[in-house]
Amino acid sequence: MNRKIGIPLFCATAFLQGMVFYGPIATLYRQARGVSVFQITLIESISLACLIALEIPWGYVADRIGYRRTLAACNVLYFLSKIVFWRAEGFGGFLLERLMLSVVLSGFSGCDSAYLFSLAGEGESQKAFGAYEASATAGLVAASLLFSTAVGGDFDAAGFLTVLSYGAAMVLTFFLPEVPPPARRSAGVGARAGEAAREVWDNRRFLLFLAAAALLTESNQTITVFLSQLQYVRAGIPARAMGYLFIPLTLMGLFAARSHRLTARLGEGRALSGLFLLGALSCGLLAVTGSPVLSVAGILALRLSASVFAPIGMEVQNRQVRSCGRATMLSVYSSVMNLVAVGTGLIFGRLAEEGVGRAMAAGAGFCLTGLLLYTLWRRLTEGTAG
Image 1 (cartoon, helix red, strand yellow):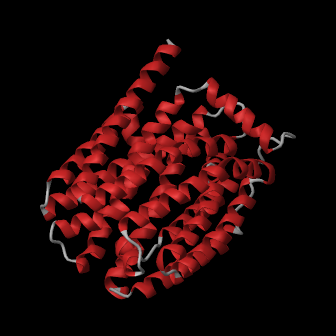
Image 2 (image 1 turned 120 degrees about the vertical axis):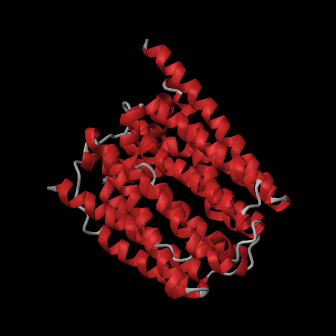
């Protein structure tokens, strides 16, 4: 019964939190409130550093009090952070919002995946992860349609509607069903951190996969969320058209729900290798083109590769958890990925100020490096298994 109620309800919260009405003009929104492109990426990096510091404590709390309570607490703060974003002005205001978001995302990290994994079970988890990702994407599509047809260029209204959507998601979270609690452990945060560190050391080859995943996902995050608008300006696309272009970009995320079909047809290894390669080719195209059509195509292809990758990557991470608490261990994995993201974000921001083409070229290099790291991890893992 928990599964029948919990998965649709959890996907509904993802849908509502996907309704970010300012998404199509995220960079322009911040610039209009007095923040530069480099300041945007600097804020992102500071936020990630705080998130890293909070990952293990939050994972410990989630394993102690349960996933549902952790998710409810995080969603309250998530709602409040959107109010701050709506009213923010300048570097300080947006930094405060991202620091609040660091607390939220460090709480979600590992906990949302572990909660959904507990509801669905190992055999059905990839489908559940795909549905969860697709629900968030569907919410963003709905918000983009409303932005383009009703909100228009009203930045303040876009921020306010996002606050309302996140408030509704917060309320739904209170009705999520309980799942079997994780095994209770008497060890404190320090002891749990030590246990997690030992597990990472024992499985240190998996760091290669985490670094590879971070390079692809962060290239997608920075380029499609922030730099895509600069690429559109470079290609001569007017700002009024960006809301419509954001809709097909968001729709690419719906392919996450079909990731299990790709792995069933190609196998996990070939599927993931192909997604890294697609990301690299997409960024390479964006680095050299000023064509509106090719710019849109390149950004869409990059989003597609990362969207399909996401549920497969979550499945791989969950399979790697051994003795430590699941939420704690997944939080550690997320911390490793965020360490990579701190560096990539600053590189993207600095290069974008010199020219958006240079930032896109860096994205191609990151995705190719990710492919090499993933290939090395896979060969080392297969060699050990053999």
